[in-house]
Amino acid sequence: MAINSVRSTLPPEAVFEHLLTPWEYPKWLLGASKMRDVDDHWPSVGSRFHHTVGFGPLKVDDTSEILECDPPRRLVLKVKATPIVQGIVTFTLVPTPQGGTVLTLQEEPAVRAGGLLRPALDPPTHVRNERSLKQLADLMKPGDGDTAS
Image (cartoon, rainbow, N blue to C red; front, top):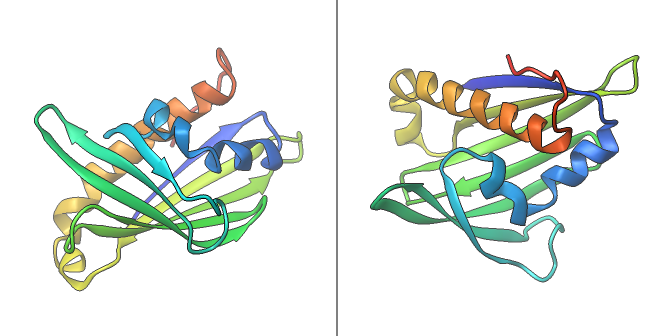
């Protein structure tokens, strides 16, 4: 399981709004190349956004479905690129005493085959998610000193 965190000076409600704006995901989620569609009932549980992931000629159409939405504390998505490449992504938001937020992203395989590959997949997933959270922090507050860990 890959776990990463980032600090933001924004309150949890504002950070959560960024997570609920799927059209912005290609701006911060490393590997998301374009958005294709968002279900009309977004952000209800069961609604999905549809995007393309990959680099160069290696791209695949992906969907992300809301499994749980508890604003502004928790968002759980099921991401699916292929029948084997699936994951559960959990965003947890914790307010800081200064009025900001610690945003944690936890990603784990959603299918058994992914669990078998976890030792090989966790390190690059951790690096990708660290960079993605840093880009999200920069998008939320340009020039802010937020850092990912």
